Image (cartoon, rainbow, N blue to C red):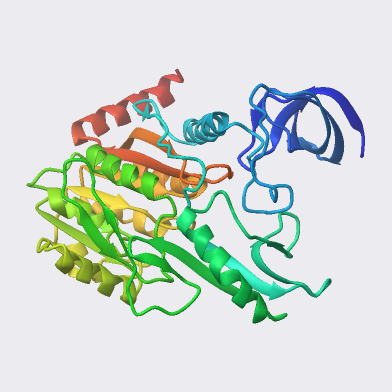
Length: 417
């Protein structure tokens, strides 16, 4: 323990942003190191199958090592990868996602698409800040949690946040710091097309516009404390790509699970015969139906359902036929839903996820029901962090092909080739 290793070559990047090296065939994860670095590092944990180390010194820096652009980067827990060039970040995050797919799913027929990217600064239109008086130094702080503990880093300006959010923080900070107490308070602030919401009550309902390629613009209203995708540019690209991948026609019926206020459902309604959105919260279902009316989409309806339980008793599930399916669950994924999706017999499914592990788990369930992975894409929704958004397309295999594949599998078992 605490062994120091000199001239350690970093050859990869882990999913949590640590450099990957190999010592006598054992994988070693090195905090703050990046691919291409030659470093000295101290082993702090030596297990049977892996080791963990802290960076002591970068002896030869990677060509992708960069100067950080935020003076709070070393202490704030918001970003993890500012010391790695944004192009290299995207390369490694996409590669890690594709490697996971290849290791755990049948990707023989899968096309790996180019990464969807946007500006890497001033891109975030939604954030959660905390306000409290520090119990140790008694100072009032408004900001984000530290990387290593639960204390707050005081934030006056964050280069990741949009200009509008930074302006609102600057304006509201003095009064907020006056009312800070030892009890933690959290504020979700969001930039909408009609202003910034979150620090104080507003009579208005926030809204934003989207306009997928070739379609008219849609206005989407949402609860000020509700969820919207944090990166407006990636959201726009993501919607356009999902419609392209689903290859929706005016004859198709589409169902969107975890539909929220209609971010995907409404654009799908513009190009389909009928679009149904399913969501678990009453307030979001009501907002989504109002958004359909606002945008004069009479072929679009939203219903409430617990998507972590059986859906057999719902008429829209039991009786209707759908040609296309889209789902965009949270980090927990959609295991219970995916166990049932094969019954809808849709030809194409697009699955959008912020957690690759639960997406892969659920895709395994869909592959058992006759779906084949056809496309996969990494989307850099959260530049300079270890997080990302992913999208895959699955298509239903025709029964004849399924039987042929089953016969081939039986032969493999019999003849062992």
